[in-house]
Length: 505
Image (tube, rainbow, N blue to C red; front, side):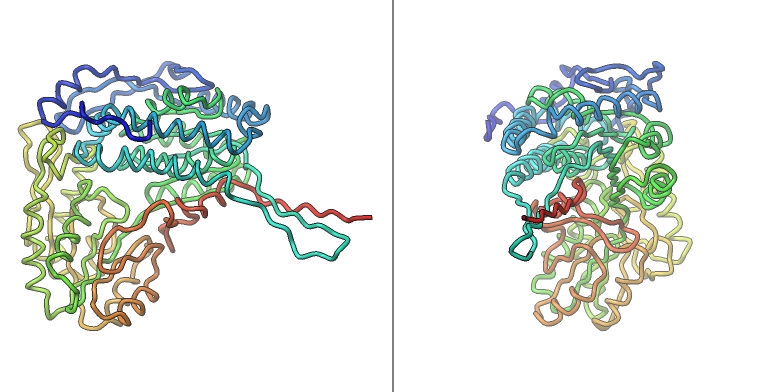
């Protein structure tokens, strides 16, 4: 079913709300091929940021559940039910998994929106297809990746091969729950590993639902497990577990650093981290289309409510066009006004929870107290709905010493910084502990390439923002992390490289 019928997909707020009333929400963990409550029976409520309503109880897993999942994952790996399956057969199962994600796209999009507040139009048109595409692309690639032969004397053979690493624990964030999960589980499963997925406690519903679809696709018991719960309980248990071979994570830099410590305290498990960002979006006066640049700059900070690790939260604008460009930004942001997330016309949804909303409001206050000029937004709105909504916000007169320019806010707060020369722009852009992404807007091909080359970031986009697909690796420099998601380079994270040397007689 590569092209599912979307003729029944809801097209209005009322239709999506009606579909929501028909959902049966699963809140249990998934271990060794079956749903189960946490070993000690503890649960927590997942609350919708749309209106503050209680969605369902979620299993709050801890050490005992981590132990059970690791045992199941290890047993499945050692038995070879998946790890020793021919790559072409693993590919077929994973393609079926992708097809089931597409076929259940309305439900998955709705779960994503109810759980973390993103607009349903984006969840259905972006998150669902991107999740399926990541799994399908990776599956299609796995039986086309070959080993190597070393250059040896005629009486020797040096074989270089990759083997699955074993048990992989994947801890993923709340902002793109399905997409971030797919970037981890797709290459981990494709290369023959057993996986334990730990979703954020703020948005666990789609991960739990994916487990049933994985089972339906034919992934054997124990190979794919889902443990909802808190980072300081089950997340910590997985990070410290002596029988987890690889830990992969997307989230904050603070947590990423702690996970490295846990790996060192335990079994030196491989740790791959995609952490924070404070990405510079650099607009030169000779940008080919200032209106397009402004539209994409607005999208770069308002899409997904600014809860994006690659958000273009530092807008560097050449001084000669600064006033004009701020006007264009303000105009472009009129299409990013918060609205009901289940309305297909909504482009800016709800903030994931009260703690994150409070953080964003606090940083808006910090920006004002530091002397930046608030030129757009800055207010919580629609409070009467019980939901968590904030206006996209723009500050001018910002410099890199201000906290709103140096610290990751993870919300729709844009800091505008002026520059005069390309050298100054690069210096400002690189003056950050982060190095996840950056963009350059210019008509000068020499400027474009020289600046792109000088930027210390894992992804650089020229005359657009947030480009790339599954063929391009994704990850950061500096304290934005290590390792890469997507592309064939992702396989490096989930395999061990083995050299086998044969001396011929």
